[in-house]
Picture 1 (cartoon, helix red, strand yellow):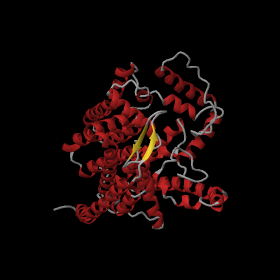
Picture 2 (cartoon, helix red, strand yellow):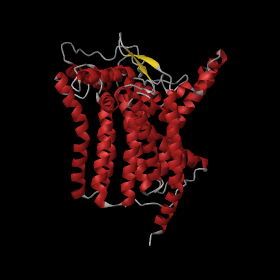
Picture 3 (cartoon, one colour):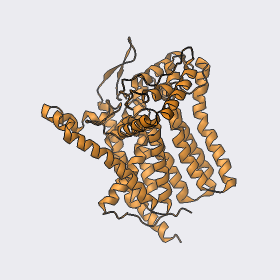
Length: 461
């Protein structure tokens, strides 16, 4: 006979899952309607060529991805176009793979595919949450993630951000499923699936390698049985690294460079130096670093070393830049403190601030003292809710604690990466699913007067 906790869990699933299915279908149908009604727009690929986009919006780096994609179409996987080795070629390769099956409709298919993946990720994550002591938070978490305007609508633009966010949600959901079921016979399968998702996330954006390692290593090391841990770690690392290794192989065959990309040093240099502000808008020249005569890979490597050296030799300036980058990372999408490359944010097309700033008085309101006060409240309020949500999970002493540890670790890891590169609120999108989860826990707990809505759930052991 099932335990009391198990019976309560089964009753919850019978009530929650059908509702999640309905809302997921509603959300996806809305996406399809949006996709079918996106007005055609011309995007400039280079000085001579334009492409007319239908069924998808141009993301912040759309031109670069499209240029890489068209190079792959015309020259094949081993295209020598420098854009594919300067930026990671993973995302253009995904579009190229879709074009093999969908031809000229590849971008519309990409838009639909990204929307399906995000819909499934939000649903599956919420479904797994419903099986833990956090089940009373399920719908609140689900709606904050699935119907967040910016996060949801970036599934309908050209950019890796939404796919990465979906990947992080799916990875944590699979871990929750394993820890709830406690079925040792399925552990190897779950690790393999998570490692494939990890590999895809790193494939589209290599800087997420730190985050996926944190997720899988925390989960696997939690098992503590050395005879189990070592084989699983080896399997996870092997599968994950196959994906970025394929990018290195592609670049080596195409250009002779054994690298994933050659833009890390340039990006880091934008956010460092005596005249830097920490933003991509910095007018300074970065750090002095002589790369004369060096190839793209060696020049990039030397730039990274120069930037690190500058931080070590200028700790006072580094601290100031780190503070600025933190503010920019968590800044609003619009308004006086908004800072980043989200000018094409689909949400801004219908954001209330658009109507407010249509008049001169509205501009003064938004960009004046009141607007600045609201922006700072938004920044620090969001960060406070994030850590308060984690604190609620930490105090749970059951599976929810481990979920909180993994979520906050990934958020902080990406935040730290931003500190070492540039402050940009767009870099927040890939971890928005997890940050919104923590903020939802914090907000609902506050609305309950600080009393967590915990119920009986699976233990840590």
